[in-house]
Image 1 (cartoon, rainbow, N blue to C red):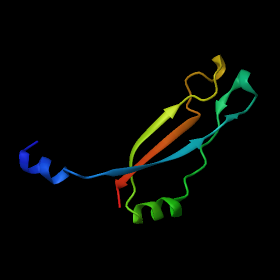
Image 2: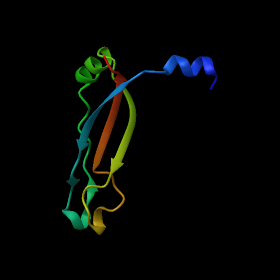
Image 3: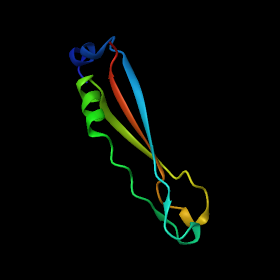
Image 4: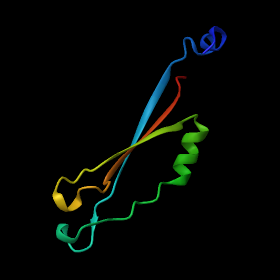
Length: 86
């Protein structure tokens, strides 16, 4: 990064917002577990966040249901947004 471009970012402050999402187990109980469908994100809400300057910068996935039958499927996500601090 050049000295000129690093000065461009000097003093910028960011704020962050985390939007958690979850889904459960579908079908046959935990012995025949399948991941349930994600609820679709609220596009109106996401559009509003975009209007307010929020930008999605990361999606962190986790397995929130600890047992052998559900190992390997994502049950929780954290959507991380950032924007310049106002």
